[in-house]
Image (cartoon, one colour):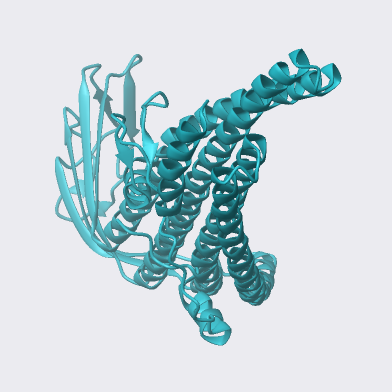
Length: 450
C-alpha cells in the first residue's frame, strides 16, 4: 500500500466516521417507532390480554341480564308402565241433604296407560335480589378494569422490551463495525511483520502473536454476527411476525436533552399513571364490593311471578292453571357461616390496602432508581463524547505526521482502530442512555403509541 493510497483512504474514512454515514442497504429499514407500533398491534401476548378484557366485558353483560325477568319452561312427556287407580269411598266428599253422600257408592277411577304430557312455565321478576345483582355488576366492572390495567402493563412491558432489544441490536452492530477496524489493523500488521521478518528486522514471535490476535478478532466477529441474528429473531418474535423476516435498524438520535428530571413531578405522575398502582386500587375496590355482597346475602330473596301449567291425557287434573304470587327464600340461621365470611372479607380489604401502599412505595423507589440511572448514563455519554473528540484529533495528528514521514503506517492504523473503539464506546453510551430513558418511561407508566 503506497503512502498516497493510505492518505486517500484516511481522507475518505475520517469525514465519513465524523458524519456517521452508513452505506445504503436493500434490506428494509425498521424504525424504533414502527417496531413499537408493530409490537403493540401484533404481539401474541398482548392479543391474549385483549381477549381477556373482551371476556370481562362479556361477563359484565351477562351479569346485567340477571336484573331482567327469568323465563322458565318445563315439558314432561311420559307413559305409565303399570295401571294406576284411585279409590274414593262413598261420602268421601261429604254428605248433602239434597243429594246424599258424594260419591253415592264406592268409586274407583283408573288412569289409562297412554302417553301424557305436562307443560309448566313461569316468569319471575327479582325484587330484593336487585341489590346484590347491582353489586355483582360493579364487581364485574372492577374485574374488567383490572384486566385493562394488566393489558396496559403488558403493553408497557412489551414496548420496553422492544426498545431494549432494538438498542441491543444497535450496540451489537456498533461492536461489529469496531471489530472490522480491529481485523483490518491486525491484517495490515500481519502483512507488515511478515515483510519485516523476511528482512530480518522483526521477530517471528511478534508475527505469530499478531496472527493469534487476528484469529481471535475474527472469531469474536463471528460470535457478534451470531448474536445479532439471534437478537433480530427475538425482535421479530416480539413484533408477532415471522422470525426469519430480514430487516435493518435505524440509528437513534444523538441529541440528548441536558434538562434535569423533576423527580417530584415524576413520582406524582407514576402514582397517577402506573398500571400496577391502578390495579392495586381497583383490587381494593373489588374487595370492598365483595364485602357489601356478603352483607346483601342476608336479605331474603323476594320475587314476583306468574306461572302457567297445562296437561294432556290426564283427566283427573285441571287441563290449564294460571297463578300469580310472591316467592320468598330466606335462610334465617346459618350457624355463623355468614359472619365468618364477612370477617374473612374484612381481612381481604386490609390486605388490599396494604398492597396499595406497598405498590405505591415500590413505584416511587423504581422511579427514583431509574432517574438516577438516567443521570449517570447522561454523564457517561458526555465522557464518551469527549473521548471520541480526543481520539479524532489524535488520528488527524497521526495522519499529518505520516504524510511528513514522521510516523509509521502501523501507528496510523493503530490510532484508527483506537478511534473505532472510542466510536463504539460512544455508541454504547448513547444506546445505554436511551435504554435508561425507556426504562424510566416504563416506570412512569407513560402511554404507549398505537
